[in-house]
Image (cartoon, rainbow, N blue to C red; front, side):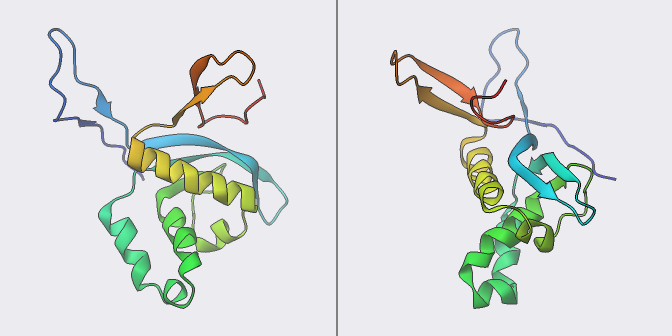
Length: 144
């Protein structure tokens, strides 16, 4: 059984009368194409948790990573993705079977939540030059 822990961000002093925001440790996502399991079922939604130092260090001892440094992202992503659809046994073999666009999506998603702490991206409308934020966690751009 997985337990989600909510941490209080200690660096941010709460403004008077406001509770500090809890630190999010898990982030939902929707794959652009989806993982196709052995029975042909397509799984598109999933959950990725924040990475720990161990998550980034352990793959460096993996023989597959030592032989091919490109395999590092496969092992790392398999450690932090906790679920894709109804599949909750995520291992490097599952990540290997993703479409390339889904792996690229998860690599970018990993970077965003671990480096930036959120899944929003600033964008500018090419027609009117209006700036706004989009949440990359759900759905494909241009779909409603």
